[in-house]
Image 1 (tube, rainbow, N blue to C red):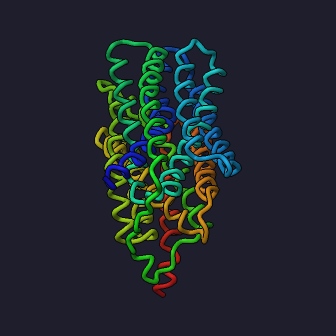
Image 2 (image 1 turned 135 degrees about the vertical axis):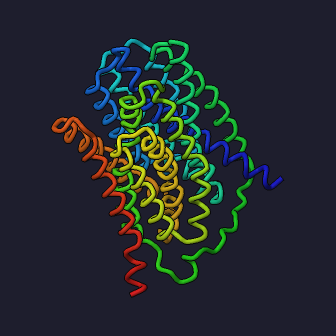
Length: 384
């Protein structure tokens, strides 16, 4: 009975991220090449739409910090319902500026989903061990939405029809999420015992400021791959729908959350976060080889680490404060959002000069390695 009651809030929260992040945030990456070929949006317009989405994510994270009196479950409801509505709006014949505006609003909804679902499950429901399942929801959402896009493309549906298909799927999931969260909140909170890890045995944990800085670098480091991977793959694998590679990205994220959670429990925040960022850096720079295998490995490695970063950093951020504060997660998400905005701006600036993403990917890889160095810095000082 206890295990069943824990499953309800975990699945309910994961569904919020499947909708708000997997569908609302990352489906655009998979549909981007098809929208270009349908002449719904230009390459430049797509870049503006991506930037608007990241800016919206930043705004949503900041807004979350100023909503401490609003129950997080209500914010989850707003996030999923607004995401479904915005997906449906993209099925309409919009001008390019309209698409850019909608993607900005979708970014706000995605941030609400990430912050509120994390707070509701980890803080309100005290279900700390549900974190890997929660963040695996992002990968599941990417995988499911990518394959829906691939099926729509196979059926020769235009991109607008596929947006309607995605909205319908997300709508069904939204109803289930709302019902499951409401049902979970009727059960008294039963706090979980958190197993003692390496950090409880004397090692100095990462402070809030350092965690925020590292998380910001992580946002900058992964976002170029997460934005342009299908576009890059389409230039090399002419006979394969690039959205399938994007599905691999999502597939890699699902089990990775459990792996990185186990790493965190076994080795602590510093070592597990550094390892995560190093592997992610390798995945980010692999496309510099310009081979099909490199792109597939990049999708697996970056997909297999980017949500692992959240699985490690967000629960660690909650513990870093003497008292649990809602805005702790919001502040970390804000800096992650800043990194995500800066990344595409750098990529667009470099691409306009070189017609290549190689330098941008190298810079992103260096940022991730910098985060790994910061994560280990205190540990090295202690060892010295």
